[in-house]
Image 1: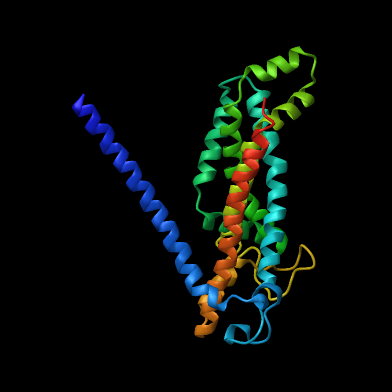
Image 2 (image 1 turned 180 degrees about the horizontal axis):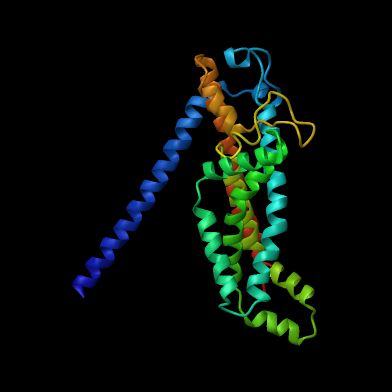
Length: 281
């Protein structure tokens, strides 16, 4: 009994220590960004486009990067949801359990999930060169969609597999069509789907490698899909590369904006997950 008690105490201390380390790292990162960026953060940073000589310390803001990030993430999100949900529903409810095709598809999700974002960026760039496309908002949307799609598909699949296999059979036995069955199942899976979507958005909006060669960069807000688009990660990258200290401080201010967006998405994921969970059967 004493040995078991000591073992439980050891692992309890280990878990608490791990949690403290993780929280400390998170607080240190956020604290550093806020400490260096908050003094340079003002309304002009959020509401104005980069002015002439912005990267030499003159007036302007990063509105172009904020809007560009929203455009790219919103477009890639729509494209990813449009493809992810039908695929996951098909392999879980239209194929037999432990189907070879379903297992191969899940294995593919795992492989795609682990591919570095720079590889997606390189593939997207090669694809754009082959199709004769320039760096543009459309190129950024397609590449970021390729990045977040495996995340969403794998998360959807894990949540779907936790659902009782008896529910689809019960719905079909009551006379529901497969389309009606799918609607009911999606309602039950909504907490997990919302969490997966928001986490994927958090990954997509904070990635620079996938859009470096595909979306390009511009000091203006894109007016069409064929125009280049700026993003916050690239804005931070270019500002940090400036030799002017004031511009480098603005990079931390841009990082504060990006961190705030990601934190909002994380808290929103928790809120909407708990809200939709109330409607589960």
